[in-house]
Structures are given as C-alpha cells and as structure tokens.
Image (cartoon, rainbow, N blue to C red; front, side):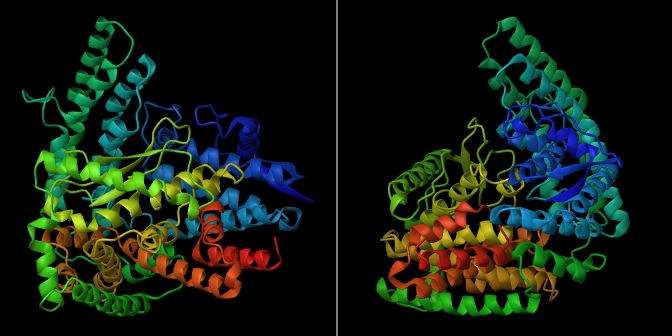
Length: 615
C-alpha cells in the first residue's frame, strides 16, 4: 500500500468516477490547481478509478472528443487550440505524471501494472513532445480545422432534440473565435519558418471555399452545412414553425460567423501561399532532423533509425516484386513487371465507370465483401466487436483532397456505427483488384475489428481503451490484408495481386517517407520512385506523396507494425507447435487494447508461457 499525492482536480473527478464510463453522463467538472491532498490507493479498483478520472479530466477539455464519444457536454463548443490551452495541457500532464510515479506498482495486479507503466510512458512522451508542438501544419489537404469543422458537424453532431439543434447553431457561431486561434497558430508557425509547401495551398483554399459556397452564402443550392442542418432538423418531432425558426437561425449563424471566418482564413492562406517554398521534407523545419527522428520513434514505437527503415523498405520492395512476378506467370502475362503494372493501370476491366452508378456499385461490392467476411470470423477470432459498421463515400466537400480510404470508429454508446470511407471522386484511383484488401483493412477484420473491440474492453482503464499507437493499429490493418489469403479469400489472382500491390505500397512508403524527410528527396523524386515501383495510377501516387509530405513518419507505421506482428506470430507458432491457436494469438493482440510493439511482444511471450503451462 502506498500513499499517493493527488491534485484536488483528480479527487474532484473521482467523486463521480462510478459514472465516468457512461458516454452520456456528465462528469464532475474539474479545474487545474496546484493544491494537493493525500489519497490512498488501497486497491486495483481505486487505481483504475484514478486513471479514469485523469482520462475524463482531459476528455472534458476537448469538446470534439466528447462528441466523438457520444457525450453531449459542451455540445456547442470546439476544442481550445490556443497556446494557453497547450500550456495547461502540459501542466496537467506534469501533475498527473508526478502522481503516478508515486504509486507502488507491487500493490497492483499484472494488468494494472501494465496500465501504470503505459500511463507513465505516455505522459513522459507527451511532455517530451511539447517542444515539437509547432512542428505541424494545422491546415493541410489531409486534415485541419477547415475540414474538421464540417466533418464533425456532419458526421458526429447528432440532432435528436431542439437542444441539440441549438448546440449546432452555437457551434456555427463559435467557428469565428476558433478560426481566430487557428490564424494565430498559422502566423506563429510562419514566424518560426514552419509552413507547408506551395502545393498544399490551392487544395486547402479550394476546400475552404467549398464550405461557404451555396445557400445561404449565395443563390446556389444549399451549402454543405446548411443542407446537413436542415435535414437533421427536418427529422425532429417538432412543429413546422419551430423547424423554420431553427433553420433561419442557422442561416444567420452561417452568414454572420462561418462565412467571415472562412473568408478571413482564405485571405491568410492566399497571403502565405505567396511566400511558401517548394521544399518538402521535415528537414527544412527548425531542428527538423531531430523532430523527424523523434516522430519516427513515435509512429513505429521502435528505436529504428531513418536509414534502417529505408533499407527495410528497399528489401521488402524487392521481395514483393518477386511474388508479383509469380502472379504474372500464373495469369500467363507476356511482358516484364513494368508492362504488367501498365496493364493493371489501364485495362478497363479493373475499374468501375466514373459515374454515380459506378460509385454505387463500388459501395455495394465493398459492403458485400465485409458481410461475407463476417461469416468467417468465428474460426479466427474469439473476441469480436459488438458495434456494427457501414461503408460510405467520402463527402463531396472534401473528396478532392481527402485520402483514398479511412475509418471512423463507432460511438461507444452505439449511437453511431463504425464507418469505412471510400474516396470515389476518381474511380481510376480505386481499382477493382484492390477492393478486397482495402475492405479488409478498413473494415473487417481490420480497423473496425481492432478499434471497436478496443473501446469495448470494459475491464481496462479508459486511457488504454482509447490509446493510439500507429504501429499497432496500422500494422494490424496491413496484417489483416494478408490474413484473408490464409483464410481462403483472394481466389481471383488479380485480387491477390491487388493485395500484394497494397503491401508493396506500404513497403515503398518506408523508402519514400525516409527519402523525403531524411535524405532530402524532392516531391518529384518520390513520385518517380512510386511510378517505377508500383502499379498505382499517377493521380494516386501524387496524392500519396503529398500526404507523406504533410504527415512525416506516419506512413512508416504500417509495414513496421505488420513485420512485427508476423514475427511474433511465427515465434508463437514455433514455440507452441500443435498447441498454437490462431484465435488465441489474435485475442492476445485485440484483448489487451492498443500497446507499443515492445509491450505487444511481452504480451505474446506471456501468452506462450501460459499455453505451455496448460492455462
């Protein structure tokens, strides 16, 4: 038993800890303070309550995260992105770290010892990364407040009451102060020499302009946000007069607040575009090499250097090319690998038409693939998600700049399913032969399986259920592209080629990401590398390289994570022989929540010893 000094903020949160996990339950408000009181952690239960209180204290500082969790607290607010808020976050992390370091781990069970270790490690990294808080591009073609505002309102802000509609209008009004802070952040970075390259600006300006195009901003069709609000309010069981009043107030908020906020942002972006350079890599940033090396460690949860990651990528590219040549022989293709790539890029049989009918056909087939996969999960997974998922096209307001595909996790309270978003703006970038692998990666048994299960692990503290380790989650996504082949899928050799093409894509990422950010490759050099070494169409390639430029290191997580998962699976198979059970291996991965790769290895080794001992 150990006396733990906790801030009064944590004690205040603990007062309501019994209800903290209920997504729609208000949590006792807490304020930062330097005052401390003594609190004794007598049990594992008290420790979990403490961690959950810390987690909920932080959750309450981020209204958009609360919305994502299904909570309606501060439903009319946006996250505070000011420097003052970042300083408060640092103070809270420092205070919580001091409290956790005083806990005697020996009084905790094995799972909570791991929770303590992970919480300390995450807080240490958060504090360490404070020095890099400006090393990002808050507005880019992949994400940012300009696209995050409509994405949150459209996809996550539910309206089931007049109060919800009032909160939506409140959020519209609060876009203006949010963008004041956003512009301050952009100017601060410009003063530090941190700006995205020139190619980013036309895309983000266009996306921003899309938000304020249409009624009530002009005489066109309803704008994206106006149409969303009207459709949600129309479903309410209230009088037509009340609906009309709410709709009119939303129109006023859009014209008086959203429009001016976006116009001001666009003006700043246009001015910054005039002084932006064509330099692409993180090396151009202040202390860019140190930042990139730190970010590689963050993304991969390993100590691998940029050179080591680059060389792993080169070796994997060579291996996958060899497997592709075997498929060329299987389909009796006459020509070399480059000829085969050109065939896969251009033959009409591999693409749906670039029409509404073609897009719907893609969504229908992706849904069917996931539905079929559901019927095969029992043989490979003991733990399965309770939450459902759907497949949707990326919305028009962001489809020209958004990535190829991505996944949004379900609301913990079941009010929103998991969503696999497919970007169908250009059907030439979504070949049929990659459909299977992409559906498995984003849906089942990929991200939906992992993320939905993670938040359903009620026995774990919330900080572990909602933890994010890219090498763990993206490594799993890539692993679950391969796993279906072992389950008997990819019967069509061209679909199997598509699986290899997507694995090749991730191997090439190791090469081009480190090339861009460590070896000072230009955007054009990285594009040329992918043109030569992958079958992907040029539009796909350009968009990918532009993504890697604005998200340094993130693209390395996929292959590094997959390699580790396969290494651990092979180790377990060799150690256990006939005792090896693939369901057990997957349950170890999924049942402990997201963890760094070194802890994943510890978990697998512990499972091996348990199986050997007959447990």
